[in-house]
Image (cartoon, rainbow, N blue to C red; front, side):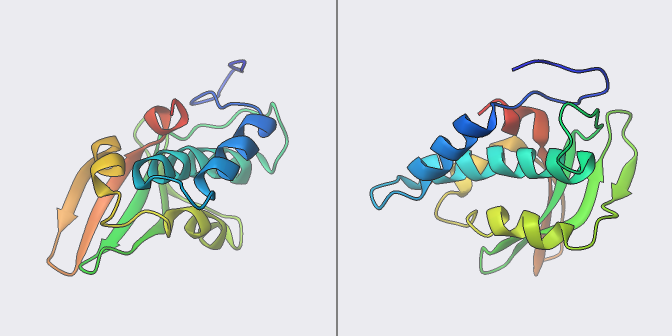
Length: 140
């Protein structure tokens, strides 16, 4: 892994990401392993969206907004934060769809693993809003 100018975090190469996904999709995968892998893949997907899959293009994202329903289902909101704390929305069409493919694997069964990577933003009883630390997620 190499750090490039403007990058917010480092990620394993695509081969290692694919291996992590294979382990998470195994029938005997533990809930906490699935959660760690999905957080890592969320960090990778944010990088992919922001760079247009052009590595080693620089990107500047440090956090991703997650929404958790009262039932425990997790999805993304389309918002992320940059290194200087600026809140932005993804401009790429379909960004939320790609991110939600990983976020939907986060739920109450593995909350003890993914929620420590988050800052609680708000809880109105119906939806809990979190800020996922992408730097910590990428280190998983």
